[in-house]
Image (cartoon, rainbow, N blue to C red):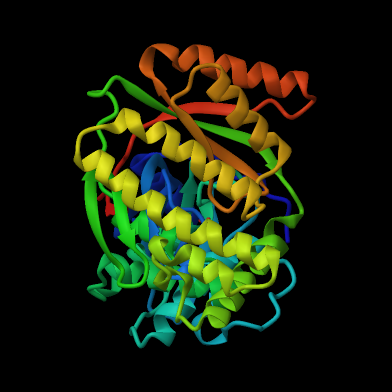
Length: 398
Ligand code: GLA
């Protein structure tokens, strides 16, 4: 592979269209966008068939694409150095070695093309250029944005008529079977189905959801996302291990998934488990599902300020019972709440990545500064902090 620099392309429809033209010598047939996400509450519940409440970030992955009349998937990234990668559709499948020189990121679009074909969708060849503003490695679902953006582009090009859950399933299938990460479906559903101004109250078993209005500005609130800029090596193995524990817990309790343990039966269920680690894992999932229900009720009642303690209780459960936090995230949460935030918690899979902090608008700057200073004083990387609001989900831009 040549060491071409990453091609300069502004993250706009015009910028990516120009790069597509330079790359393939033709116009794209369309430009699609799919966002990253943060999760307000409901962590490590999705692979337990439970409930989550993410919203879409303004950061997106753009995909410019056009059909081709050979059976080739051609991909190029404006974020990664390198030439166009051409993959024969018939040659794409899980477990096959990536040919030498083919960069790892191409597994996401390739995996989606494979997953769509596996699900019986008649897709043909396509040329793609992608460009993302979703921070990578920050627990903000840059992978899901690339998967859903690819699925949406292929859907648009080939007229597949997929719904949001159909796009999300293709993305999750790619991630699980092709990339090899045993994630749940929250991130892809968030990218595919969120709408501006709302959190997505999602039942991950039925894949049904409600768009719950979350107008922080009107309530005088701000949500800070604090990217700790650390990712501990346990992230992948720890995630798979937690998922296996949850499945073992459900089996021991004789239910299809931990979602089937209502909060009112928690003590009785815990009494039937002898392993203290399993008890803690089960307690997190059951109480976390209850916190999602509580958060949904608070938003319905127009009491978003009262979300704070629910978020902070969620963090304590992830730290002490599910054991997926880390010193950097714990320091963000402790510092933010001590500095006057209404509540804070890690968001996403954990072992690093980002935290969310809910603050009164007037305290946002002070809290952000306290978090940065505390990280520096502890010798942690200086976090990257931004304020965010619920933004649009996946869509066609042109
Ligand atoms: C990662 C996974 C999601 C979900 C979260 C934890 O983001 O991709 O499916 O399990 O972790 O809530």
